[in-house]
Amino acid sequence: MDTHHTTLLIIGGGPGGYVAAIRAAQLGIATTLVEGETLGGTCLNIGCIPSKALIHAADAYHQTRHFTGDSTLGIQVQGASIDVAQTVRWKDGIVARLTGGVSALLKKHGVKVVKGWAQIVDGKTVDVTLAKPETKPMRIQCEHLLLASGSVELGLPGMPFGGRVISSTQALSPAAVPAKLVVVGAGYIGLELGIVYRKLGADVTVVEAQSSILPLYDEELVKPVANSLRKLGVQVHLGYKVQGMNAAGDAVRVQDGTGHESELPADQVLVAIGRVPRTHGWGLEQLMLAMQGRALKVDDQCRTSMRNVWAIGDLTGEPMLAHRAMAQGEMVAEIIAGKRRHFAPTAIAAVCFTDPEIVTAGLSPKEAEKAGLDCIHAHFPFAANGRAMTLESLEGFVRVVARRDNHLIVGWQAVGAGVSELSTAFSHSLEMGATLEDVGGTIHAHPTLGEAVQEAALRALGHALHV
Image 1 (tube, rainbow, N blue to C red):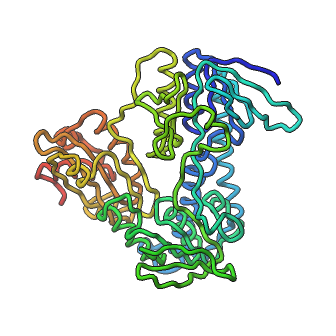
Image 2 (image 1 turned 90 degrees about the horizontal axis):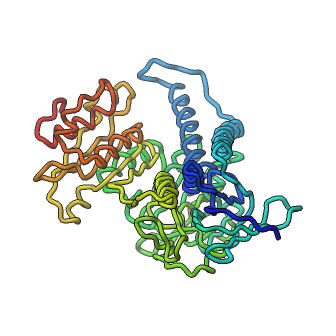
Image 3 (image 1 turned 90 degrees about the vertical axis):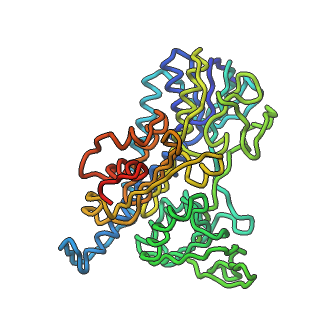
């Protein structure tokens, strides 16, 4: 077995791992990155990027079908069809360009990339089974070990993936659109993909054990999404527990809150009940690191309980967001290089790419109240926004939460078409310690959805101009 030496060894080439590698190399740290699959991790290959590509394609097809009848825009088409195989190829092309870009960046900065599967020996030694079968394993010794293994999809014990039961990964590369799709889980992954399949022509039924779709969001934010699901014809069963497939394997057995059982016919069943840190299969147990539930416990510098062993991203638990992992990876690289850094963001924006979209950053009104803060909040409806009118997207709003005493903004939320692009403005105002007066006094370009940000701040101050 050949032995190689490096200063920093990173296990996992997802957003956190590859960003850490690039930044470390920029700072002159000898860096080796081990990845057994494709660079870019879940987000780039089987998560964020491909799902957003399919969301765009499905929405374009849905809009085209809308134009086959009466249209307020005066647009009419004779018919619409979609070649799902071509759509998947287009999506895969985007992914390939991005993964190629990541590979080029790593090479440009001198990162040694090892394609293979890591097995931890100890805190400074990792054995790698290389992807090429004819090559013998290699051993890598390091001064610093960064763990960035990501997360895996949760399955249902009585409904293992296979046959008609698919994961979100499989749902992103359909060979055809099923006539009837049952989605288990009404979180953001389940609803994003459920809406995609409905717009592509499937009859979609969503089953959720809790009493609301998108249980992590408040009722005011969820309401426009629930309205959209009804308009699209998506059936939603709340407070239902999945019992498994029926004997014939062509329907999902469910039980409502009263104990009554029924069956939901399904050509395919998408199980989207969440993700958990990837902690098994690569020797992590050898290190006996402190845990926090299913995740690795880290401090505000992403240090684990073992000296010079670091962990970032989904492996460290919620929020499982690619941009969080990237920020952590950059920070760890700088700390190893001798810089003084701590991971203490004021807020990390989160986006749900449903129809309409939801974006949150900081505290909601209820969260602020729980934190003991005396806050005011106000929202500005897109029904009063000129740009929203031109986009035929009047439902939704922007909401701001600020302290009553000094008007310091502590939270933003929005729901509506395209509001994901407001996340940057939300994050900036929170990190920079903006007040309502700061945002209200900033000239916002017209006509844009961003004007609703200014108007929400003005409304909280008692003098919105357009509502």
